[in-house]
Image (tube, rainbow, N blue to C red; front, side):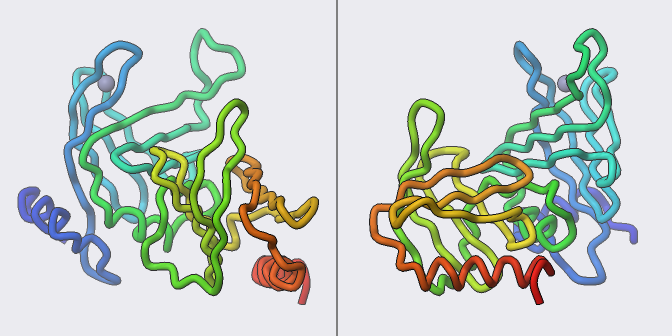
Amino acid sequence: MAFPGKTVSRLTVAGLLVVSSGLAEVRFEVRHEHLRKGCRGVMVVDQNGITFHGAKKHSWSWRYQDIQELKLGPGSLHLLSYRDRRLHAGADQAYDFTGAIPSGLYTFWRDRLDQRFVAEVADGAVRPLWEIPVKHLGRITGTEGILKIGEDRIVYATPQKNDSRTWRFQDIDHISNSGPFRLTIATLEETFNFQLKQVLPESKYNDLWLSINQNNGRIP
Ligand SMILES: [Zn+2]
């Protein structure tokens, strides 16, 4: 499909990224973060993968299958490849981008990618069946927010930058609770421990546990 670059950019700004059959790609400017400073370039996203054209040798193309983790946050994109880092034994090459990343990319990737996609954003479209105020316990400090339980996803919404999440049920490896004021959500990315500010009734927890496991095909 031949979209002149400028047209695509304007479509993106208007938030018209996701068109079921039509739009071939979306392109936008981002900054590739270096250890010091960075370079500016153009990112192109389509249904096959992601391409970045930056300064000098900073141009890459990744198919989705070659991306170990793709983390989309507010104004940030973290991409972990499977490529070994030269000079750093055992570490895989990661790439960080910042800038005005089109918000439509969240739904585009949510509907296409597997558990390796991490949504560091709160899905505003979720219609919660119930919600509960919580504290996400970090290693040293935590963040406070609300867990919203939807029919097929859980949203953790917090004003704290980069700590919101949206998990589709298939992103959830398992949930567990060790008492009425605790809830643990384990995902491929990490295990999230929540301290609950209200009692979580056992029936609600059991319903959620069942929905997730049924959705993931572990129980009929
Ligand atoms: Zn660069």
